[in-house]
Amino acid sequence: MRLDQATPEQLRQWETELAAQYQAILDQKLNLDLTRGKPSAEQLSLSDALDGILAGDYKAADGTDTRNYGGLDGIKEARELGAQVLGLDAANVMAGGNSSLTMMFQAAMTGYQFGFNGVESAWKNIDGAKFLCPVPGYDRHYTVCEQLGIEMVTVPMTATGPDMDQVEAMIKADQSIIGMWCVPKYSNPTGVVYSEDTVARIAALGKIANPAFRVFWDNAYAVHDLMSNPPQLANIMEACVAAGTEDSVLQFASTSKITHAGAGVAFLGGSANNLNAFRKVLGTTTIGPDKINQLRHMKLLPNMDALSAHMQKHADIINPRFEAVLSKLDAAFADSDLGAWEKPAGGYFISFDTQPNCAQAVVKLAADAGVKLTPAGATFPYGKDPEDRNIRLAPTVPSVADVNAAMDVFEVCVKLASVRTKLAS
Ligand code: PMP
Image 1 (cartoon, rainbow, N blue to C red):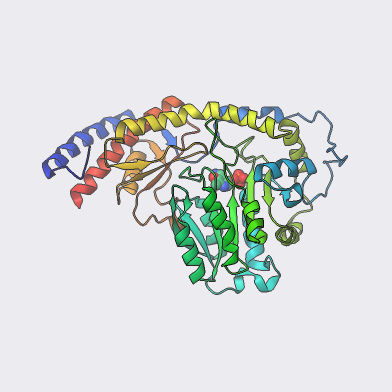
Image 2 (image 1 turned 45 degrees about the vertical axis):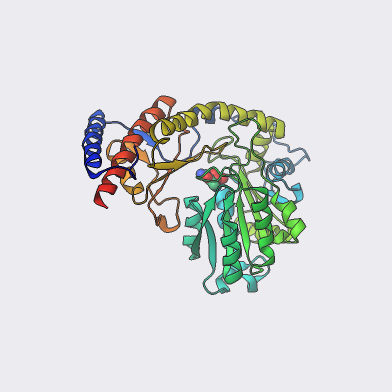
């Protein structure tokens, strides 16, 4: 089906046929869900050995009794694992509580209220303080900015990461840009892995930006490969050292989509200066993290080999679901002008771009037919996709059969919304 070559009669005929197909779907009274990127129960079960794994031995490697207060930075072995995930020295990593998003908010609070270089550098003192947001991106990053009243400016994603020509030009022109969100590996939702050149250029931003500028490098999918020989992400801290900009990047990761989501361990990595500023704020809110949970995690995943073997089991579970989505998209749209998507090599999402002005209609049609999709616009700041095109598909939770059923509905909804939008234009 190609809309660019269709005559009005053809469009009307397609509309009639598709409306009949859609009605048949409505009659099935489906209840399917491709919304949030959560692990499936099968994936969560891979880590059930966490429960009881300490068998009464609460001592960390250095003899720390993890049952007691203290140790703001987290236990050494957890920091070491976080350091390997983030490509840093353990001295530059803190192991925290159950959520990297919490650490991102705490870091943003540190920058906003207290400043990473003393209170005079606090973002609250900068008129019109702004964050750059590569789009489409992760909605909860936008919520952090909204909560703090930080304006968001969008920059398009490309196949190699954010459009760096635009990023550099914007930062040169506007010293009130004090931050940038990045999901550098298997970006949420596009699945893009930033190229080496992009990583080097992001590391160099600290040379042209306001000294208060910080990149929030959210490496949530650092080890979430779906293929063998996965793409390699260049080391941002090495690039920063080469550029002399070590203070310009804060790195985040967590075990949320490795072990039990919501009951894992989060990591923050950065320069000594940044970590010291963060500690001051963190130490006001807690005496220390849940070290027992950190120790449990280190017993289950003592090193990178164990972590990789564990992630392979995740990939074995997730892969058929991704393949189901991708083969349905291929069959439905490969020869059409109705949508564009990429095949991700890892992560949790497939990002689908409809024709302009169709995404909201697709999501509504699907919802009315009992297939929940992430709200259109959620992948843009303020929930506004200016072209109304992007839809994030998250296939990890439903069974393969349900993914296939949901994608059959998706196909009809995309076609129907596209034809109707074209007819109305
Ligand atoms: N960052 C990204 C890019 C994510 O997709 C997610 C989970 N959807 C998170 C952070 C949340 O991580 P955590 O559970 O560690 O807060």
